Amino acid sequence: MRELDRRVGILRLLLADIADRERQAEDARKQLRGQIQRIVDFTVQFNGGVSNALAGMAEVEDRLTRQDAALRHLALLRERARAELHAVLVTGEVADSRRRLAELEAQRTRLVADASDSVAQATGRPPCRCNATEPSRRPARPASFEDYGGGVPHWGLRPPHSSVRSQKRRRLQTARKESPSPWSWGGGSETKDGTREGMS
Image (cartoon, rainbow, N blue to C red; front, top):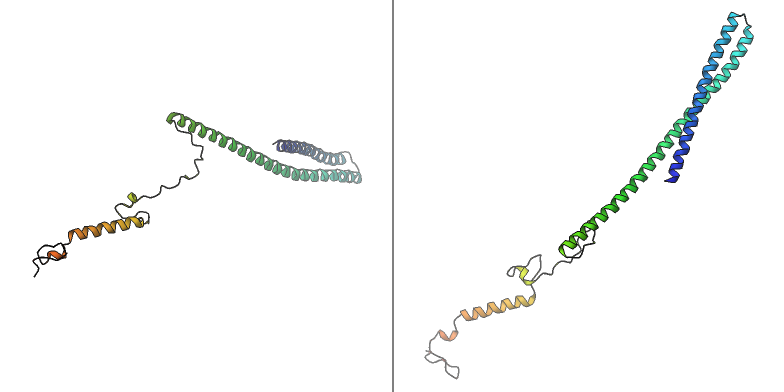
């Protein structure tokens, strides 16, 4: 910032110098034009020599031409200095904006931290120092058998093989209990040696 301020000061001094020289050149031009008119008036009124009048006007015209050239050159310097000053000022404004933005970001961070501390004191929980813009990194809860909803798996997962075997075993036992015994087809009762009495 100090370098920018110094550069701005130098350019403004340069512009002030150019403006002063332009004012002096304008005054000199007016005086030279007046001199040409006085030479014409003197030659006509007092019967002056034409040769002397032409030589005097040529000399004044040369000086007037130099003043016109100086004004053109000063105009070029003025335009370039103004453009440079504008660029330096814009650069300084951008630097100020960035500095102000950094200050506001730091202030926002402090406010968020203070708010988190206040909530932690009110709820009795430790304050969260994580960034609010970052996604949550908490691992997903592992799926249990109850999450499958009665044997229908969620999230494209399958129940454990042991659970499938247990279900098949229970269904087989239920089917055996409900189906009739083959010895009951012919009637009679079973003896101690495994034979059936009353079978035809």
